[in-house]
Length: 507
Image (cartoon, rainbow, N blue to C red; front, side):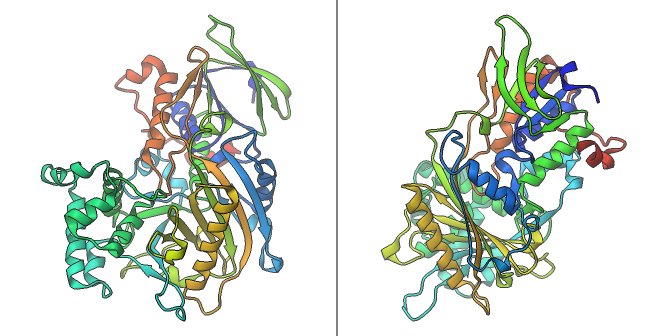
């Protein structure tokens, strides 16, 4: 392969997160010369999945909030009894453990680009609400919530009158954008979803908790407009890929695995990949149509490359400092947590992910939550831990200090372990804590349009398709007038001969 310094690149992309990887794929298959770089020695950037050793190295770089505002306050804690931990690469801890609804543009683009063939998706199963008992002598519990009309009909714990109210709401959501339905909810569009549920459907506090859980919102009060859209997506996704589940999760590291597959497919299209390559300086002479980039890379050392455009991922910018921070505590436990991964209906696949919500009103009133905490429990089927263990991802907004946020998450871990229905109480083997910022909005533009900045993934526990919109915007900028050609299709590619060998090209 010729040296990267001997080519005038159409675009250099810095960072291998999901957005950058999809952009590289789309441009390489559209005939552009793409140089794709990452300063890390692994793919995925802010969406990466890390071995235990990588997580500890990552923690050293992100223990404070500076100089990188995207991540901070990272720490790793091992149990004194570490004999239960396996070797480092037996684990793949996801920095972005988002689930993906069946009716997602992300899945559609994976199909149209043919990249889906290198991915394996697993079912997301039950949704639970954590509830304390009114009797001090009784342990807290995890209550599975009905998430479809069929679930509601068969639920024995919900009174008949409440069933009718809940089924009326679920039927309403399925066609909530219809003319008659819009007249019902639009006056509440910017008000809390709870107001709509209470005043228009007569749902009590417990049923409101069930509905809020399906929104996966970390905010104390999601708006009716936002909540209805998410619940509609959940309900209409149910059964798309099999009975009993509405969302999927990519095996071997979640969103990180999708980013890596996009990079492999990009390599087949002709993109060149260089890990462990740092962007030091950008030179732009006014009036010139080229940028000169100073890089530190191996084996070339310090080199200079030329490109028409530079696209940077959000992890490599200073933006977003005023955004809300989110705290996550990743915990490895020495239990398979089988009770959480039972198929929901006959013929359904065994799920590999379960969702638990800790909502205000579901726990002791003396410890009312400032904002919800969600826990994603991943079985070993995800490929993120050895057989007989599970990985738990506890997430909440960082409303106060790091110490307070972590204390709340640690308390939720203890509550969860006390409530889970297992013969032997699970023990924590490993804790990995960090805080992060999530981006939103469109692409940034600087240096006379020669440097574009992608905003990063939209916040949330379920993948938000708005994350893909800036990628399409950036593709149009790089493609120029060719993007308007009817024959130039975005992320729609025919099969290519030798595509099954792309792993070799990618490495």
